[in-house]
Image 1 (cartoon, helix red, strand yellow):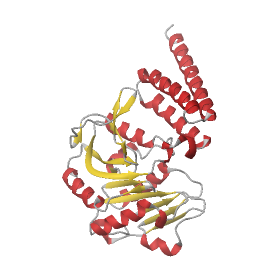
Image 2 (cartoon, helix red, strand yellow):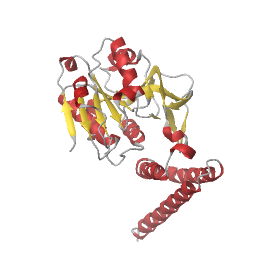
Image 3 (cartoon, one colour):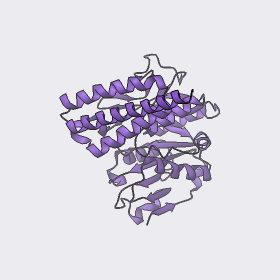
Length: 309
């Protein structure tokens, strides 16, 4: 049975951010995110207990005695994913008057100044309702992986001269992003169709489509991006989940003209999966998805043409 603990804290009324940390087969003590978040809270003179933890592990990773150190806790042994975790935290944030939700993965290293810097930025933009997300720079082994400039059919590095508020479309990985609670409530929450993958792309697409803006902070986080090593760290099951989410996002959220570009990129990816990653099983799955997309597009155009007569 799922277990939920919620602790009402006086500090909740004075702090406008609710961090939501999603765990999977890892205790808080072994999560780099949790350890560095607590250190950052102490440094900023914030309540370190003010954190919601959603535990997707089959075996719960938080002992009953440890729950008193958390604002909220839920154990979900069915592993419903990050969308379910964020929606759970969103409901709590709405109920207890939090203005912002801080999304956190378990493998992110936060600088000790992170929360102090975040609160400073939030105070600057809190009354500017067009700014709906605060996005840090995220690196993986020294390489910037987030945020990215959304261009036609691809993601590109941000311009070297960064504005404080991006006037163009950007996307960013979930971990480290602060998002307005009211904005997410207006969307009806996080889209459960993106259970694990591409939820971040969907989120920032909704933000841009509604004329909202992203503030780019100076904070740099280090994140362990497991999917960066397709050859050794990504199973075929995991890749199928990633690919299915990608296709859903591209075919439902992007312009139709971008779909052929995506198909071309998939073909190049299949070649790379064979030549570089030595993963022919992934290449077969990629090609099967390409065939399915082409078949669906052909059916769509045939139906569209027949409806014209």
